[in-house]
Length: 185
Image (cartoon, rainbow, N blue to C red; front, side, top):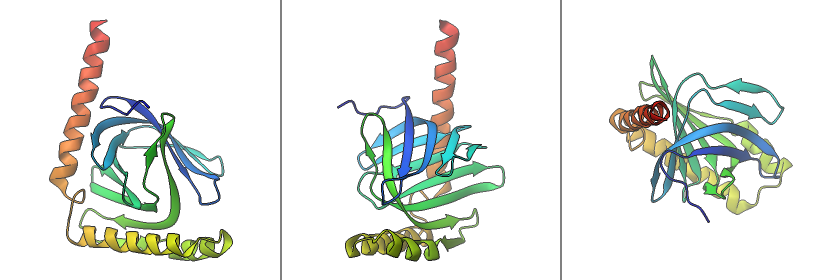
């Protein structure tokens, strides 16, 4: 199987427990492949929601799709600071078509000042019953939410400006390199 490498463009797909498509990103640029994580940037990428609504991302977002953790983290780089949107989800896999995971409703939104809010607990409870989540899945999701909150409170990576900044710089270097390659042709 072909592995992702820095500079590749990749599709991202998120599903629900019942197999339905939750959300897709039309393109993301791979900026690093770590032992436990795909790091990609979405920048002016089309996003399609389950209800077919489409929207264009407004700013670069450094996205961390973990291979062994039950969450992914999207850090949105805005003029007012870095905002994080953390999704409780299965570990992400790459299958040569896309980076894929199953979204389990619970989210943690983190603001530039480090404050945070846990979102969608009612949606999680509803889907637990409606989609009959197994106990193991419920427990993993609750533990993942706790792990995310702890990471935020302890300002662990990637909840660290210098860490995100290093990926922003890497992204801009890759963009410049790609432009130079096009101009050389």
